Image 1 (cartoon, one colour):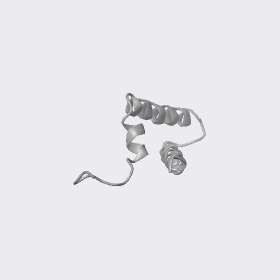
Image 2 (cartoon, rainbow, N blue to C red):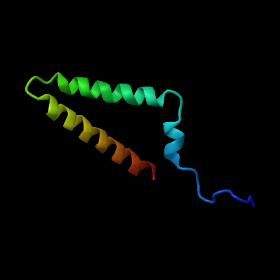
Image 3 (cartoon, rainbow, N blue to C red):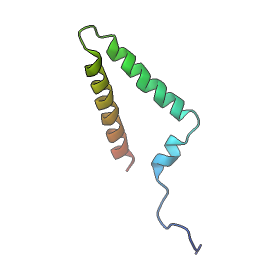
Image 4 (cartoon, rainbow, N blue to C red):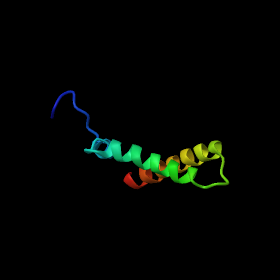
Length: 68
C-alpha cells in the first residue's frame, strides 16, 4: 500500500481533455458552430450567443453522463 496516494480511480475526463490537440479541436469546433449559427439570416447576434452556449452545455452534459 502506497502512503499518500488516492484510492479512487483516475477521472476519465482528465485523460480525454489532456489528449494532444484536444483543446485546439474544442475551440475550433465551438467557433465553427458559432459561425454556422451566425450565417442564419433571421437570427440576431444575442440569440446566436445564447444558442452557442446552450448547445455547448448540452454537448458537455451529454458527454459527461456517457463517460460515467
